[in-house]
Every structure is written in structure tokens, then in C-alpha cells.
Image (cartoon, rainbow, N blue to C red; front, side, top):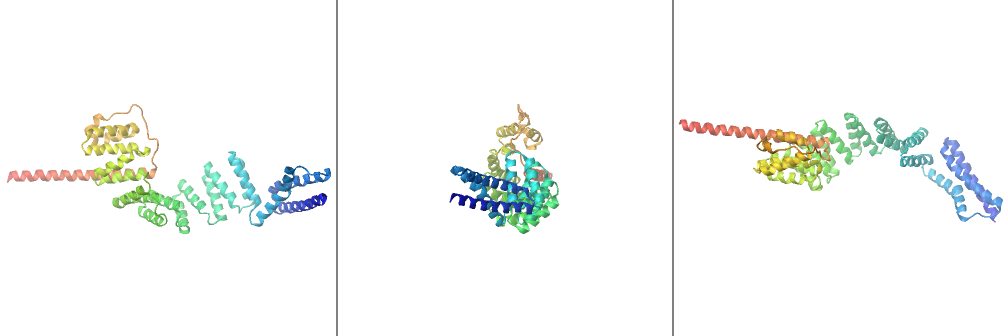
Length: 397
């Protein structure tokens, strides 16, 4: 009985061995050698048992059946369902190499895979990700494009191509990719954000507004979309719509202090001093805005006639960021307290910096504020001259 069982085992194991062997020959793929080698070990253990005339321990028998039966049957079942064993093996090898910080061998394994199987989506996608991390942007783009060719609905790779093209300065190509992506998948939020940002950089603010508005139809609670929409309205000097967008963004995300800072700037433009003070006071708890907020508060306290507070706050802003010393020297409203503005003992800078989009927006609001202030001063000057002229005419009469 034992001999019959072992003969049957060898027949089936040998049959599976032949199938895997011919698969290797047919595909000309040496990755199958791993399977053949494991099968050979299982068959050898069985032959040893036959020659010795007794069973080995239970653990060794389990290993024998796994190597000779389970592994090859599992691989045949996977391939029957459309999974390429060689592709998956290369994927596993590449991931192991990546875990070991061995990018070179990981790339070699994947390059070998895509050379053998040019339609390997996994191979192209993983290669693209490695190239991107290494800074090889153009190679990454090529591999992402090949991945898209293998899987047309890989919208993430589509977005990656657009993102990398934008990083390389190829704005128009990136815009084209993003527009095509949004036609296929209009609810892809990252694509809408990136497209809107590029259009804003190109000062195509009306087009950016349309992009953000379309995206909000699918993501009505996305605070970043409202914030970006607020920036687009700001750059068109539509401050009422900008204010509405910043308020919505801040209501959705109470920690979005940059939106509150912009609301403070808009409040200053409209001379709503109390609202501006409230917004800037909240922003002193955000590291990237702390120095700016203290500086704006110093201006507000000068407007309110509270010089002591103004001195404290402007010096605090300079202590946090030395660049505000120059701004303080140039700020007209701070002239009366200029003698009390001091240099910090140690030069310090903000721990976090704002991105280019946020900085450009803040600068635009600051310029608008000064334009409005100058206009107000001119109107005030005209009013003073008219009153003086009227008094002189009255005296003459």
C-alpha cells in the first residue's frame, strides 16, 4: 500500500514537473526554474523514502507535498485564471530588493520582466515609481505612459504623467493631459486641483474658476478646492466671492489658518478692523503664519491708537523672522513707533514656509490693501483741501 502510494505520488509529481518544464521552454522564461527546482526536491525526498523503506517525519512529508504538488498546482491554477507567474515573481523579487534598499537589483529585475513581457502593467508601473523616487522624471514619464498603454483606466498614472510634466516646466503638455483625464474621470480631485493651479500660474483665473467649480460638483466638502477658488477670485479682485470661498474652506477645516489669514487681509481692505484683528489673532498659532500675523496685528493696533501693543507685536514678528525688520522700516503706519523697533539678539526664521501659491496670493492682497489705503488718503487729502477752500471763500465773503 505504501509502495503504491509512493509510485502514484511520483507519477503525478513527474507529470506536473513535465508541464512546468514545457511552460518554461514555450515561454523561454528561466523564472520557472525556481518551481522546477522545488519540485525536484520534493520528488527526491519521496525517492529516498522508497529506497529506505520507511516514512520520514511528518514535517518533512508536508514539505515534500508542498514542493512537489501544492506549489506547481497553485501556479497552474493562477495562470489558468490569467495571472502571469513570472510577472508576479519578478514583482515579489523587486519588492524584496526595495525593502533592502537595493534599487539597482530591483530595477534589473523589472527591466528583465518588461523586456520579456512588454505588456506587463505591473513591471512598467513599478519601474516608473522607482525612477520617480530617484529623480529620473523623463524615464518615469516613459514608464507611466507604457503602464497606461497596458491599462487604459489607470487614471493615477495619467495624473502622474501630468504632474511630472508640470514639474519639468512643460505646462501646456501637462494641461492637455489633465484636461483629457478630467474628460474621462471628471471627479478626479487631484487633477482638478493641479489643473486649476497651473491655470492660476498662467494668470488664466477665469478658466481656473471653471475648473474648481466643476470639481466642487463632485466634492462639495473639499476645503482645498474652496481655498483655491478663493485665490482665483482674489486675483480677479472679486473680494466678496473670495471671502465667501475662504469662509467655506475655514468652516470645513478649522485648522486652515491660511484661509483665515486671507480673510483678515480682505477685512483690512474693507476697513473692518475688528474682524481683521480676530482672524490674525487666530493665525498666530500657525507657525508658517505666526510672524506675518503679528506684523499685521501691529498695524491694526496702530490704527486703533494702541501704540504699546503695536510695538510689542511688530518686535515679536521681527524676533520670529528677521525679514520683517525691513518691512517694518518701510511700513508708513509704523513710522510713529520706528524708534522702538529693535533688532532681535539672534536671527531666526519661520520653521515652516508657505508655498508659492499662498505667498503670491498674500502679496496680491497686500498690494491691494496699500492701493486702497493710498486712494483713501488721496480722497482724505482732497476733502481737506475742499474744506480749507470753503473756509477761505467764507472769509472772503
